[in-house]
Length: 102
Image (tube, rainbow, N blue to C red):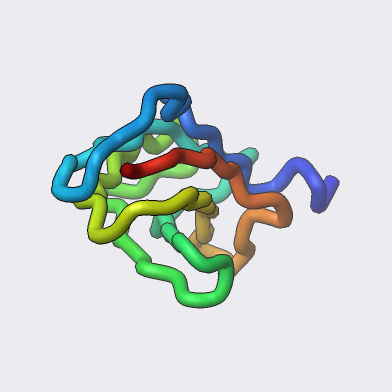
């Protein structure tokens, strides 16, 4: 099932309000049935993605990831996270978390 491919999840929810200058670390995991996850990609605008390669990619295990972000300005933000696999598949649904900064 294509909709089950390259699943990615965010473990922590940013329910607190952060402040400009704070560093927030998001954590999660990704997996794909029988295909290695080779990169985790992050976006704060839904258009521009930062890709982080996964070392020791293995089709048989989940990939745990973390992403540290330093708040640059006040506002409400949405972090989207997606996985990319060895065969080029990108998560059909990105995992998202919304957070606020003052």
